[in-house]
Length: 428
Image (tube, rainbow, N blue to C red; front, side):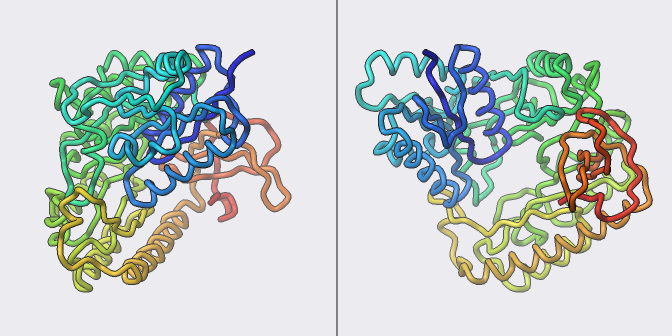
């Protein structure tokens, strides 16, 4: 009888990729994959530690797994356990740190031979230079595939714990990336998203760069669209923007991490660019792409952020005119420089500032989508939904705006030209 395994992912797209890769390894080894809420023989939780809330959710899911089947093997993987393995010792059987997930099947088999005590598989993540080469041939999504091409970060922003949990920059070989993309293309995927912990650093450890990787992926037959994960603004040079604009498969959708629109705050964050330099990068993208969708992340309530600094950040976000702004309240992380900074901002003030930026983001998003009315957009259809009693085929434009067309015709995984005639076709 096949053993049943259930997996649950917390955190970023890189974590999601790794969870799917572990699932594929288990499936290929004969395990039956079941939903996480069902009774299983093995539960695997890929944890996150980016915020205090992420730590809390990770612990909750580990305890939930134990309650669902007290006799099951519970394995905790990823960033939270890499940073704080001692905090999960009371509710798990196996602790698997970063750079060890590709060994999931072997680790489980070895544990089941003895099942005594807690098995810990952790590496000194701060000193390893090995890239953990996981692979996917299929994903939960049937049209778009996220591909992890890089791990680790050398930036050490003053608020961020991730360099300690993920280690230094390690890049995947272009041959490995191309091989995976070719497999996915043969399996019908038309869109790929290149992602990593610090994607802009791709290749600094191997003598290549992100642009070379994009060009390599662009050569793969069957792939119609290429997207990029979160980018540092400094990678956007005249040469880079002009080069990617010359690649027809490149989507005009760019997530440029900002964190603050105030230069003084950026200095305390150790972000290594000014607000003015960031704005220049956005204008470069708009120079080479027509109406690109620019999205970003912003932290409110960073230590020492005065009302004047917050207003400067808010005005800057208004000026850049993002399609969408993801707003986060500063989370104090033990072990980072920012945790020891004076003038910590009260939670209620963080909430007030967050609400102001979220309101601005909603207005900017509505304005960007309003400009799409009356235009014809290429949409890669992904799913069928029912809305207001009508059936819609739904997918994303090249700018990653979700669009629906009212029809019962099955269009999944097809590129369709859709005229956007009314706001109801824009799906939220």
